[in-house]
Length: 203
Image 1 (cartoon, rainbow, N blue to C red):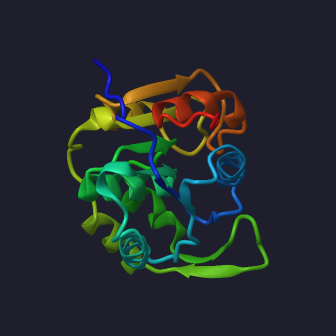
Image 2 (cartoon, helix red, strand yellow):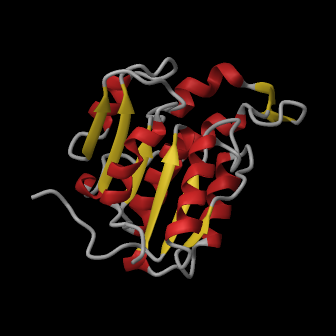
């Protein structure tokens, strides 16, 4: 039997990807849906610092008093990696969207000054020590992968969909035939994601 939440979460965390922000299309679309249909749910999408260690510390501190049985986390790309770390530590259900599987390997090529994706006039420095921070937080083999919903695009131009599918074996997977890393067709897949989280418009 596929895993199913007992009830919709009362607290929902969204973690954006590398060089991204709460201004990402997916984060904005979900925030708008929650505000319109489920305003009683506590929604938090923080701007994550470049340091993975600092990003995780921010998230863990900010959710320290969240109810264990009624919280969930979503993450895209690098945020999917972070979401997996958080979910494994807290026992929460989680959603990943084109998740980074081995960011310590993949982001080694990005050490140096980087522009923010949504505000390219803003820049940050991705330091070499951040690679070790990513490696140190690796969640290892997934515990209770059935509590995870993985949205994976075969058309992802940055990450291997086969590697994502293998890493999240046992999760409830929705593998898209095409699409891209940003999930430009996110709207088409939003209902399935919301259904996994038991989030339906309030009546």
